[in-house]
Amino acid sequence: MGASNQSDQLASFSRYGSKVQIAAPGVGIHSTITNNNYLSVDGTSMASPMIAGIASLLRTYRPDLSATAIRDAIYNGASNLPAFAGKIVNNRRANLYNSFKLLDNKPPIFTEINIDTSAYCLNNIITYTVTGIDDIALTGSAYSFDGTTRQIS
Image (cartoon, rainbow, N blue to C red; front, side, top):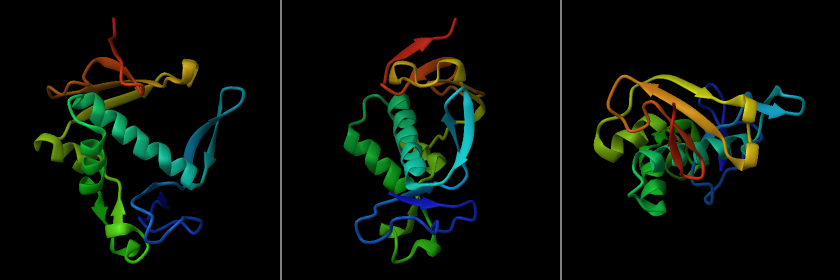
């Protein structure tokens, strides 16, 4: 896992090499800290949850896909950044939009994404609400990263 910055460059601290398959944003990421606060943090440990989040969204949208198919959608949907040449396999930086588009050539149109911070990480489940203007399966529902869903009342 590599980390990119806001300029789509490899972060100075990032891992790189022939075993690093993909990069994701890892600089200036807002993370939760104690006492219900947030802190801007850098690290590949901030980039990894980006990939996990993409995988979760793809799996929620297409629960019929295998883990391998989700991984392939993430890898094949990644942006090819010349700045990563020789550092990240196939110069990949994760791209949620492109990964969704690969699933059925109809990427979602999100108008709002909210994360419930009052119960953030409660029982190791992060719940989010996605509202959109198209017919994507995420519209009007809350989903947890463990793959379960429940309708919002």
